[in-house]
Length: 197
Image (cartoon, rainbow, N blue to C red):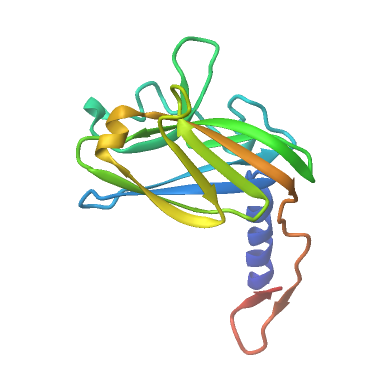
């Protein structure tokens, strides 16, 4: 009975966690002594909008929450336009899309190095149907970086002193989400374990 209860709790956990239909990530690791790591999420979902979507786990930082006390901490987030002048900063930014999906979606990426770090490493791993162009948010030609497949790039202090906001144009080419369609569970003989297939 205990194993069945554990299995039911596991299934409820799987079904109650908000996740977008297509979830992609960028990982940022600073050179601070504690190696501050931040992961931002973006992608597509059939319920997403251009604003904050709480049902997908999106949420805006409190005003000045990303900057921290005195602007001393590293921060990477997406900037969303609110009804007022100030922008919402959020670690997740999903946009509307039905699958298979082809088209372009634009995000605005904010990176604040803080005062303790001198550089930040950005790491990505995308499926072949995803192509990302990262440019400066001023005129789009002062900085340009193509992100395909998997790779990494180091943002230096001198670059981030020039730009805090970047335009991120994501091109999807007939992409389908990877999702869990079904699984089976079996209690392993002579063990206190449940095997999920």
